[in-house]
Image 1 (cartoon, rainbow, N blue to C red):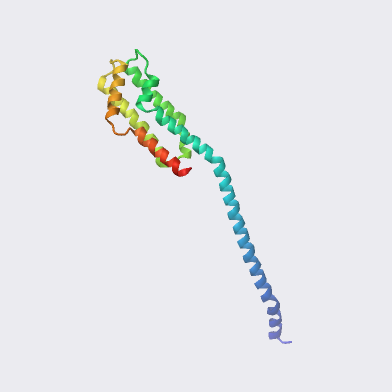
Image 2 (cartoon, rainbow, N blue to C red):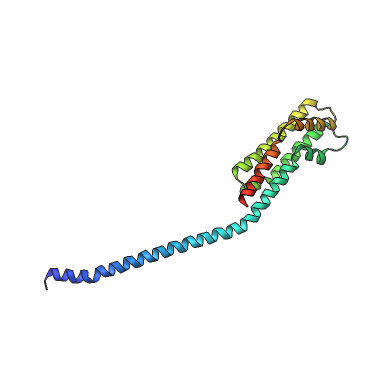
Length: 176
């Protein structure tokens, strides 16, 4: 046997072996890839099932927050007869900030755009209350502050809380 025949004999066994090995590798690789994709999808669905109620609760809490910081709601809850405008002003701002601090973690479950509108609504409501308080001065009665605040809100087409609320509701409808 010469050298050429020996190489040919060796190739006769190794080439089919390499073809079979390549085919098995290809099939096994595809199977494992598909299995990984299915497991990933299953994990996502499981996580989605667990997170969806928490996300919905976060949206609900933000909706309640936006409703609670609207001027009419704030006035109804906070104003007590005999309050000075200075005290009412301070209580209104304290309530808005306190409610915001209580709901700040909800941003984890919301889009950045929604949360930015919620933050903007908070800041705009604070600015609105501050502007109303500056118009009447510190020595006025709380009722005067209420009147000014409600008059200003009547002249605004849409309050920042309404804009944020509409956007959040739209996002909820799209997500769920």
